[in-house]
Image (cartoon, rainbow, N blue to C red; front, side):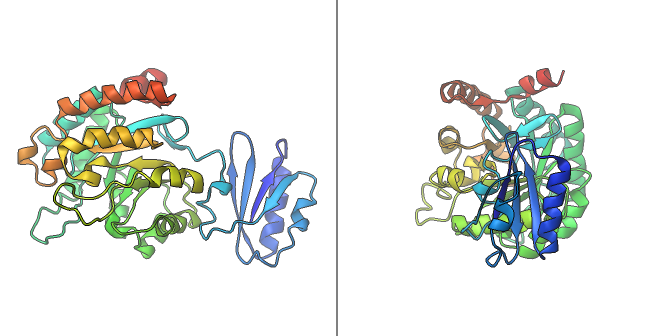
Length: 349
């Protein structure tokens, strides 16, 4: 059940409303937007008489949510969620780009690439310290040392960092090193991990499972939101299809406008994993932005032939710089501001 509070309602009135909800054995989740205040009511609400709330003078409207994902639904926050990260904001009418290597391989490697993606305009540095691999013999990441190198790169460039957490132990280790936790496709339905992430004060980027439906994906996000963490991003990273000869996955761009109608959560598009081939990354990045994505996450490597993971899908720094220029131009046509690192620093100053 969703309660929309009238503009001008006082803090005391909202506190009174939450107290009333709690006294009925229900749970209240409040979202304060720029235009309205929304309270999502969770629990056994089917027997609650909505007139008990709609008759209150400072309540604008009350309605039930039929979708199983209550907190992730668009109705819970019609204005859309904006995730604040230092002096950066993800969501609304802007587009940001996260870029960097698939995995941290050495100090020299991560520093070179961090400087290159910042110079091209990326506003978040991506890099894996822990790598889930299909083969137990493949490179698994540098672990703690990789996190330390990401932190070092962040301190030098000023870029916040996103990196993948594979389990609770790794997530706890990452708290002091990473600004956004990435949860990979393999862990999308690791519900025990999602519950713990709901208790953490870090933005979470939740990747879609390789064969997950949109509703299954949103229900996984619901686990994090229900735990109290409101800072969730959804990442479309491609779904498993039958044609693996020409594309690693099928990047489901249909999902973006569908999600825009269903949820208030910002949407990230991953054209690197979504295609698996360097020559497909830029076209699908542009398509992802045109479809309504709020952010892109792109793999960049200056020596892809030496990369320990996913070299074939990594853009060269020069290719990435060219793509950033195209994204800025497209943003003007779409009335969507592409936030580059130089603009972010100028705004901060």
